[in-house]
Length: 506
Image (tube, rainbow, N blue to C red):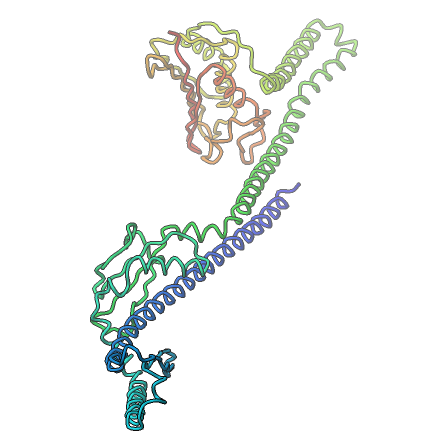
């Protein structure tokens, strides 16, 4: 798959996931806002019903008191009649323009009206007319009486007008009627905000900005005597969020899909890069194998010439060429097989204690000829006082050789190559080995990739740098197997330093 195609698919999938998450988030926000509005409307409706009920209780209280007083004052004279007379009553019902209902009862000896004298009967009718007139007068003034009642009721203590137990009962009933079955806390406060009484768990600080509902008690009271009821719900947030719990699995599944998508894209890019590196490896391997095979093939053709076979010197030369090219070919094959073996299983090492200073000195002495043949020089400063390490000598030697060989491969053309190898004790338990050069260096974004298999640092227009991209991967693998660590410091155009740290033998 082409890299451009992968990027197009990545952008499409990213936009799709982004749109899906945006829709889910907006849907959840709208649901929460809608549920919050419904909750607030239910609370306001409940509080209004509670205050209306309290006003009706207040009016009923005063109407009962005043009706009893009127009945006592107007009809008290009728109670002093003969004990032997038959006492009856007349009942009048009335309704005010405001919808309030009242009853008026007239007591007296109704059966005696036919047996009393005409004079007495006239007095009785006169009294009856008087009572009727008083009743009509009282009925006409009923609205005014009610207004007076409401204006005078504010003088009663608020604890009597709105008892805490009654208010709590009304609130619980109204909240239940509106489907708000959750705990609540309330308080009745005066105009200054000082609580008159409150429930045990009420707290202004715990209510929050959107969780305090306020309603005026007795709106017809004078402004100086106005009281308010405050209510908040400790579990409102959980109540609101419970309505969108079904969205949580949707978010979880979307998040899992997003992680799988990201992982798939990363794997796709890694596979793409790995494919490119393997193609580069095959091309390099073909080139590396082609040279020794061509040389061996040419030498074999020369052996068919009679004149060549008759010359001992030429035969010796051809034999040497075949032997060298065979060794070169075998070395390249072994390098590939080694890395393949390390991938499949843990490396089998023959550990032994060696003096790193002596081994490195021998390597430098052997490698000196190759460096000088390139017009450079190599120097060593082996200052470690304790350099005894437990390693596989063959692999340790190969590690140092690989690093020195890389320095020769990636040298600069404008200045002579300078190689420097040093050792030092950085602690009683660790040995540091530094291999520095003044070569072309490595760019910062390439440093983290140089230890990957098949990866080769780009060399611009230079095509004389051969290899499989396995050298540094082998070095990194072997240093890790020896319980050490390796890092690299480099500045492009200035040079590179490889730092190996190995544990010392106790």
